[in-house]
Length: 153
Image (cartoon, rainbow, N blue to C red; front, side, top):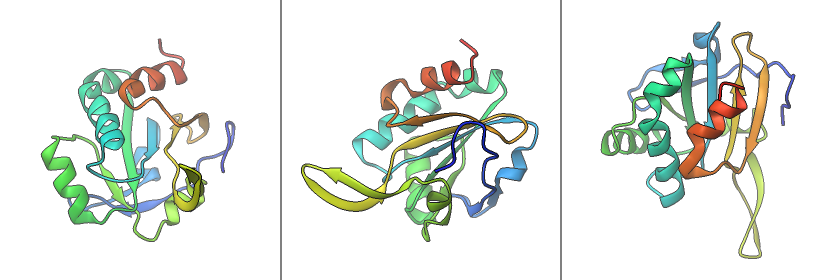
């Protein structure tokens, strides 16, 4: 898993509207790259809606948001439409972005170990350097964690 001070691994992926998004598209901007397990589940919906509700405030701080899960494009499209999400969601169906960021691997839930997406957020500065890794973010208060993580509070 990349750590604070590391150059963020570049990535490219297809979003809910069929466009391609790459980290390099955000050169010179702060980026929130957040990995989440599944569209339309309670925790993931709460997290996405918290980011949506604070999208203007985050944007005023010069922060761009990109979500990533292994759901397919059509599922992302439905999720983004249903909750009016204004940011791109990458359909990482091959999990290449998740693996590059260490956000996919063994998880333990209710005593059962399985492979899955680890809810993790990377804060990337204008130079493409990771400034904060938030493991298991608070889904309902994620925007505040992001602002604090960038040292903007």
